[in-house]
Length: 331
Image (cartoon, rainbow, N blue to C red):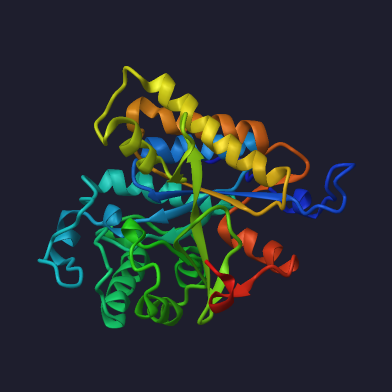
């Protein structure tokens, strides 16, 4: 079962001045996120990593992992058959109970709980009504999650579901320029979206009332060929998407070198926030999670670095006056 950790408070560190010699520089922000957020062992592992390093993460949750077999039969994504999900469903009520505990304690520890929709379908062709349908299913699933597995929900859960889930990331990073998705996000109460891909680390842009973030292309490997800063993309490049534990150390070192190079460039330069994305799957023998652990352990303790959630990053970026309308951003 879940184990509560002491909340890793960043409030003081966010207000502290930068290290001597860099007083005119803003803090370097690092935003780590996880898509899917299902495996309970990795919930524990990520929370422990964050607590150890004073970091806050963002968890983009797929809501089918809170659906038991009875709920599975009722779920129907837009243009899909009833009871279908690209990422499956929870295997048991006990699994859901443990996952709910991890979600709630992660929230109490200061992490972002955000939406990754439900069944992980490509919404590139979805209408505003389609997106709204999926968002409504996500909301209803979380509203009733504890009751659905015969648990008494903690005080504050309904407030989290109604007001605390601020962000969304589209499965497959699809619909990156979709006006229908943005309109549906706004109506659903989201304030930020993290579905874009940018040419390199970039400031977010504001589009129709939604603050839009993008995972950057970063140089990787001996030829420093750009790749999206996400574990799955590294997995495909390194081993063509096939599990290869024999070369796990090589893959870890390559991933860490790419993450660290991307961090160092911004840290020594304009201090544009660095965003990196992961999944609750330890691909290639856990190479990319180990690379993440090395990066977080190295940089998050620095006085002029803050490893923050997306919602924590937004006011800090606004304070820098760097938020621009999407039409003028050039992204």
